Length: 336
Image 1 (cartoon, rainbow, N blue to C red):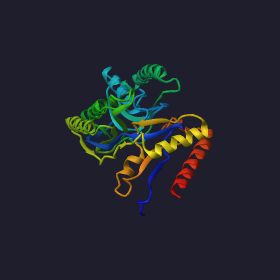
Image 2: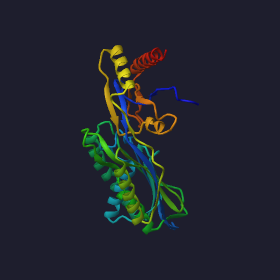
Image 3: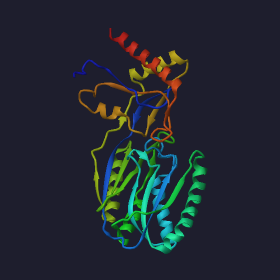
Image 4: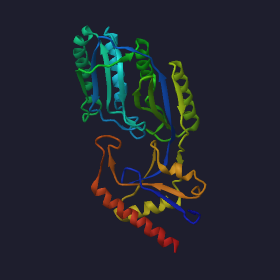
């Protein structure tokens, strides 16, 4: 398709009515593979811990809000249990749904001896109370739950003591947080990384992360850091091809047109937004056939994106539709 005669790109994926997005961070996904070794379970008992009820969130928009990462919480609980002389081996471990989401759930199966099994319920209740107290201070809508139950199932193998330790150590060490903030825009994250998903298989632990930055040098430095740290634990890392950021133009014709239509419709001024989240405009404008186009992103109001509480504000959809219709109508008028 020939886009030569097309001047504007309207992206309808932003999440706050009244804001027009003109820029975003770029980034890349990272896949980490840690080889592990197993041994027979023998006569040990199987127990399972489930963490759920966390808020989670968008790894771009919410990474700076201090929300719990369920995978990190699980590992910290295992570390505390181990520090109190409770012996266990990891049988299974999984958490998170996608690299671009802050994980809200994690699950682990442990092989333990009879003595440890008898102590573990009290240990878990202690850890649950600790983390729920902190969660309530951060966000009262969080209802962190830690379920502990015995399993009647039989596992053929569990991780060796050394492999269990490596799994705990590497997840504990990998960052999942803002790395730096913009010097030009107060409060805007410049570089971050999110540990979004883990899956324990028979012979390896797989970790998937997403790093973002509006500074290419910082992104490359972060990738180098992750590679170095992962290799120190015996893991291999593969950084996928980066997706580009987007440096929009606040003075472009399309920005002026969108702002004018919004003010005409609502009587209010539209705010400009630059986001740490990824926006499709960055990838689209990299294509030679689209690189000449002026772009903006806007949309209805969506609350709690990438969480179980995600919802759209119904009344904002009507205003959004009228705004879009007005913008397209004005562009059509200019093209005649």
